[in-house]
Length: 259
Image (cartoon, rainbow, N blue to C red):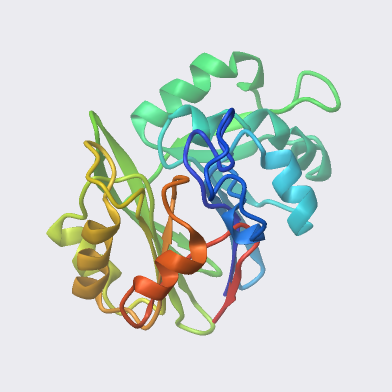
């Protein structure tokens, strides 16, 4: 299994507009954060999770050349507004619709923003076409399984995703944009080889986990490796990583995990 972090930042990104703080002006490339998303390859199956506004640039940077299907964790702007750039992958598929899995809320948001893409085939070459599907609790595939669970995020639920590769048995958990991780979601994540958790900032936030809260969840899941994502400009990569317990690290744009 291979996981590429296309982006690890918040809705404002880092550097932020009109900010000259030491993180926004840092020369460390790990402090340059586009909006959060990941690309998962499981026994050759390419799954894109979320579409940041920078999706086109992220795919060019990381040489993403194929997507088998797309999962939208929730319909907030920093996760849905790059979906128009999925049109290129519809072209590469021979002009067929790309399956989009999401929650009811997420599917409604896609329908509202991209009504022109609701078709079996693009309306013309070079356009996007999406086939909306409700994300099941268990998606069984030739290459493995993807389990889903709802995580509380303000007034809606974010899809938490657990990928298990059939050939290797490797397990990867992606829990972004959440205020807490319910007991059943902790249980699903146990046994993962790698876990990614929302760790917005040092201070508490009403709809995201703070770094302290994310560390507590990481220790409860007890995976060999945990990475924090969806970070603001309040966290310097090197300083934050040095302060974390063993086994918990800070994700950065372009990080690639193979396990």
